[in-house]
View 1: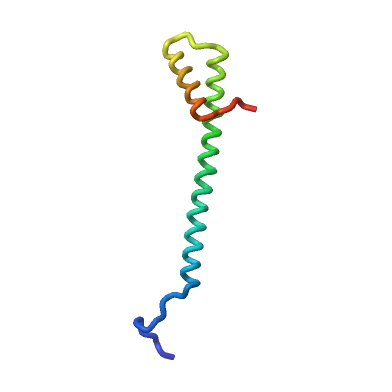
View 2: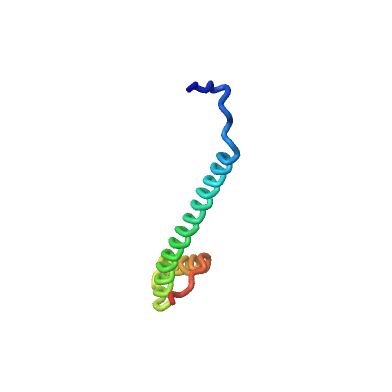
Length: 87
């Protein structure tokens, strides 16, 4: 049995490159899917907090200037996030 010299060793075949491309694409797509899922989950959790606080401020309006600013900011945040009332 002879040892091949590095200069005569064949380059990887097309299947090796195809496998590398496929695995890279799968990892990239998987990362995007996981990121989108986690972002949506975080947004739902944030919306539940914002809706609860905004509903409380709407049912009993604040009596201080700071409370009024907070109520206005929560209402604006609720609109920007597109948060709906809890079902």
